[in-house]
Image 1 (cartoon, rainbow, N blue to C red):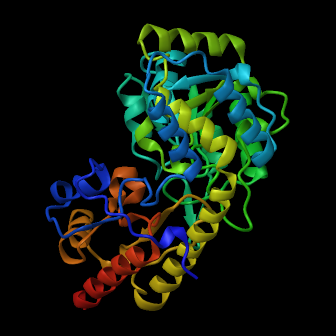
Image 2 (image 1 turned 45 degrees about the vertical axis):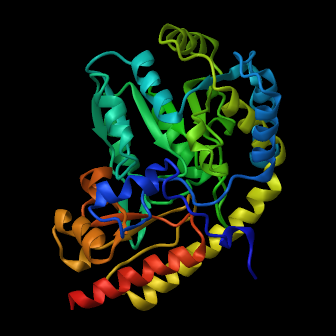
Length: 390
């Protein structure tokens, strides 16, 4: 049955990083892009209608304090994820990456150590290093096609760290962390006075048999040691509106963070971003339910296609996100040649696994947030190119 998500929308020459920058990045205008993490689907009608109404109003002055938007976030988190967050804990930020950088700047000092869990979203490295802090790696363990946290290593490294940046659900490996895993992580960090900054931007994108648990929703009595960063951008495909939310229960930490936002002149939000955020969280639920069914169908199509047609590449069905982590080590290509192979031979643009840390060597990331006919074309290109390798 055809759905709204099967519609192919031309994005070329629309100012799209994903599409318009692909030729420069991958060296050919014929490359089909599956890289940067936005989807090739139109935002929910509730969002486009709210934006159209805002445009029709015709006045785009400074927006007021965002209590109405924070109320929408609060209701969404409670109804979808059973977390009773408080609107008073929330601050608007221009994006999750910006918020991570500001958290590192605000709550650590130069040369302090910050734990990340590679292979992980590349800005986690740069957000730390750009502020003169030191990355302390607690690598995920890859066993039997699935990743898990190394808690023994985490416990040892937490003794010398000031902060941990958590990716939940995890980009790029697609893990949705269980309650027991999250509780163990919290306990280790609390024992060592390590502040947790949780990037939970993919929290709404979780598939059957798994549940996203907001870290700060766990009843540990220590929620004040957790800063949660979220946004509607991945869920509702509004990344270009650069609007996200930092949720900081501790009043002292929240005041410190707010002061830095004000000092940098970025404490105000884009009027269109706030409009889209409120509309998405208030009215986007039914659209998201349809999207999740479609994306899960894409995960099944992708894993079955690769298993049946490209056995040299291994992939585990993602538990969350719209990102697939491809194990290409059996192709026996050096990483630089591997990335070149997909762009030049298969004519598909994927993310180079090495950019996610040295643990990503031999891997590539594929964004399957696209109409299934486009995904099918990309996978067929990969299969033909791999078969020609012999």
